Image (cartoon, rainbow, N blue to C red; front, side, top):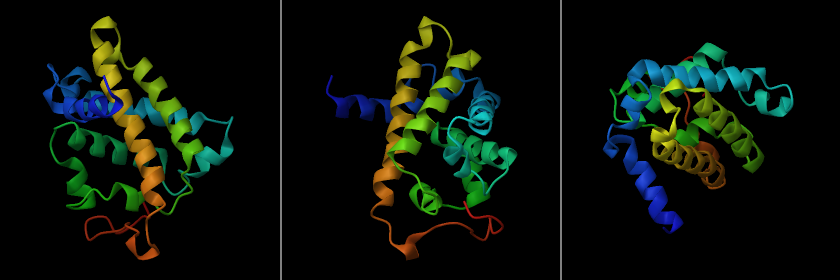
Length: 169
């Protein structure tokens, strides 16, 4: 199957796969577990100190919470991210202040793939398709941020909103 079609299927699979990705992960608690597994890896990464530096503006708990809320919403659950960050996701703008290039996207994927491998809800051959969809989705998103950031203007940066005024995300 051509790459484009696989990617489109991956983006749609978050809600159309049976059972849906959110359910396969164990619901909201399972998504929190995936984010925790991911950030446990990120914050323990001593091999590439520059990578951990990308996350220096937030605590581990804040990073887990932000990603968890985003993924729940992206995978068809309640709008937890919007409740905290506002109506618009602005994924590229929220990452524009950070030096995120292809190496960072690759390192991010390494940790996310490890988190998926460790997640109880994604183990077993019956979850190979779901893991493939998630891998495609995460890879697309990671590299999309890299490419789209090249086209951002300084006045497009997105951080604080009325709902989230305290930190630079």
